[in-house]
Length: 419
Image (cartoon, rainbow, N blue to C red):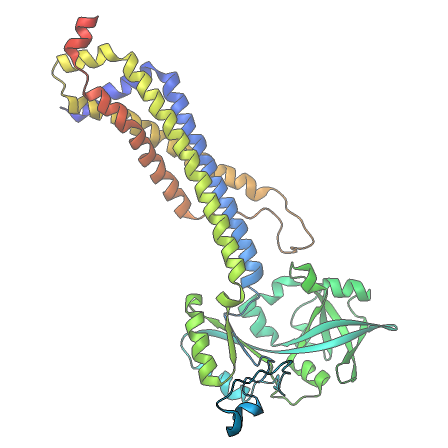
């Protein structure tokens, strides 16, 4: 049968019951709109939370971990080599925090094509002197330029330029929570005491706000040279080497390779943040399940409306078949109706979903914990729109398949005789 004629008949049937058609299309539109808006918002939220963690976390961290010596003296004795030795309260050995031969390691990493960048770091536990009170904290000695390029350090710094750590001697950037404890302002001088009871004066350049309040109460940042002077260490003293890769998914395998090659501990980002990644996956899964459920509910609505349309159009179907339309033609007519509802309802859903996402993106979201965020996060990923449009077509096709098949099997003789 002529395809143009089939489309015209389908359009006539839809317009004859335009209110039901509108209800079905509205259901699809609402489902797609909420699907797009929900996924865009949840994905934006996940990206924000991932950014707070991943932007400040190295893909691979090379360091020396303090741990008990597995090989105890009794295990080296030939007298007890055939015995089970149970040793309690094993203490850590004299493990050096410094990475041995750090300069050679850094040079080797720079030649590795898989590495995007390297940021050396020093971790220095200290006490901040607030009168007679000592506040436990940590000073991180960093390469400011490398930290800013690889880990967006400058995005979390307030009241100063991060490069001030390089340009101003003996300067420090305090965590917001730590600065609040010390009642420190930019330009003030704070006193720190090392674990070896050496005192040092540092000038406050600005504040750092990571979004994790507990971290901001204990952390602060200075240049690598200043950190080495505080600890009284030579210029090649480094406790951590942070590595950022071109492909984050290769981090676990490369970390194992570096641990063997450099004879140091190497921790990959997946191992360090396994629980965080699980939370992101679960939130995304819930978003998809809710969106798909909305589309399925809309599909049932279309199914019911087409069933009612078939029941009310028995005479028209009988006349069509009596005038030469085959069961296949009738099947195509009702599938065209279902797909037409899905197409136009889905198209409007994509438009309204995008507009709804724009509205969410403009809603103010001001919080002291996230200084760089001004509005609710939204992800305008084209994949969401492709999935939404695909599901609208597939769902409406499946919803119209059974009613269309039912209509194609109607016997016109029985219908006409019954009338």
